[in-house]
Amino acid sequence: MNNTTKRRKSQIISELLNEITPVEKMQASTKMTLAARIDDLILTRGYGKSEFAEKVNKNPSEITKWLSGTQNFTIDTLSEIAVALEISIAELFVPKEIQVVNEVHFVLNLQNAQPGVPYYTPFNERLVERFNINANANKKIRPVSVSEIPA
Amino acid sequence: MNYDIIELDEFSGKGATVYSILLEGDDETLFDHFVDENKQNHFEEVKSIVNRLEIIGKQTGARKHFFKQAEGLPGDGVCALYDDPESKLRLYCIRYGSVAILLGGGGHKPPDIRA
Image 1: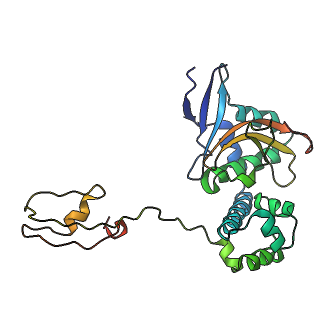
Image 2: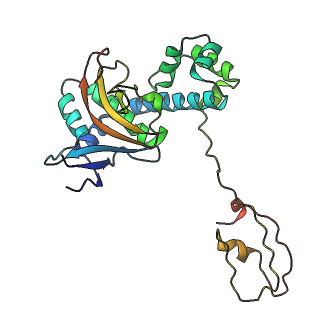
Image 3: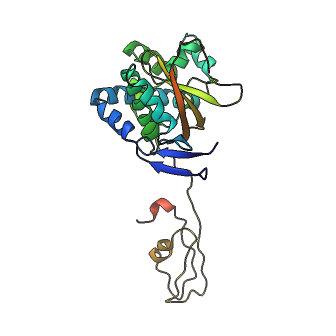
């Protein structure tokens, strides 16, 4: 045996997953994603657990329960949380936005560009094609972000 | 003792990768053994843990607050995942941030006893 990582399917696990009803799945999923959302919002607002507990007038152990993914929240509790976080209750159920962490802006300045000679960037060769560089090119190409590049 | 680290396909996804251990000479992972040993007497609890693991792997990731920390010896990183709502059964795990977890065994224990 080589102490290596392998993937496999387990009959035991598959059978158990099939036993879980859609309601049970939805209940667990909602509790856990809601707990994750509240945790993220608390962090985003810069609160520690004790600080947030003080803000909502609860013990830190109560906050631990809220974030455990097993809490069956009442409307009243969600209202307290939403007010403390200065959002609407509906926003607690909005999925976390995927953040763009890498956006590239750069300027191409080609002098004496030759026709028929492909020019590539390290990021996306279509960027160069899009700007249709010709032999007399002596111009700055406007900055463009990767998000503008057509797929 | 030799072992393989097995990625559990049913659980792993964009949230986290879920692994368990396959000991040399064994056909089942530690997690398979946990399920076998407990499903007869604690079926709903095992089902709850399996449900939560799937959500951890496919959606939320292995967030710290989903687990009870410090369940092993000081500094060994062992934590526990419980069933919902009654927390009768505990599954011992090691978290690697929120992107990977390694599942061990576990079972029924009174809440005041640690590993």
